[in-house]
Length: 314
Image 1 (tube, one colour):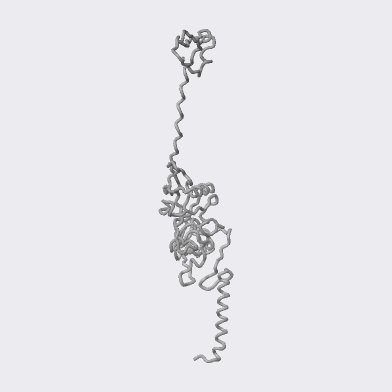
Image 2 (tube, helix red, strand yellow):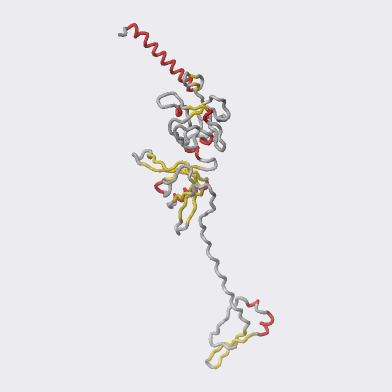
């Protein structure tokens, strides 16, 4: 049995131990001290170049993933700890000798903590520089948007073809005009985030499926304009094979030029003489041969032949 006198000093000791543990934990998390079995927690500093297996001395550790990690997340030390413990999953750097044609493995906790993942990582995998975006990249979907592109979010239910696409797939966004002619709205767009379902805020549980594409600023205006006009959009996937393709969409053929109209036959100059005999009226035509031979046919190009109101003569 614990008497009252013992209780009087146990409580302050327990409180003191908790305070010491809290202080030590804070100092370790900030990277200021090392703890037995844990070492010193390294806090990543932007701008520091990571170290690879070919640059560290024997005995350095390569840190492995312990659970699936998602693209666009920023790696923390806690992500690399065994579940329910403060232990890291590591292997000696000597297990990963440099291989020709393969990127070197990153060595040390400071080489991976604070970096933003370019792709998903499975458990028990080491890291290479190819797994990460450049230093200074922001975490989240915006990490996957190139500096010269913009992120365009589309409702997958309204754009056939989006559901079958994966991250980094390339596609074109097409529509047709009122005459059924094909129009390319965005070309060589890239899937930053494939179709995901999310709940619309304040909708009472309504779900929407969306995909995020990387397109040029001009294509953002083109696609949004088509949506505003109520045009139907289509996502057309491009080939995933490494060979370059020269295939292009057919362009509408221009209308055939009109055939030139035949020039009218030049009419020779004529002299009209009206003859009235009794109640008979007649117009008689005579060729002005002298004028015809003097001025030639060029002057009379385009003239039309006059028809006699009655019967004509030569």
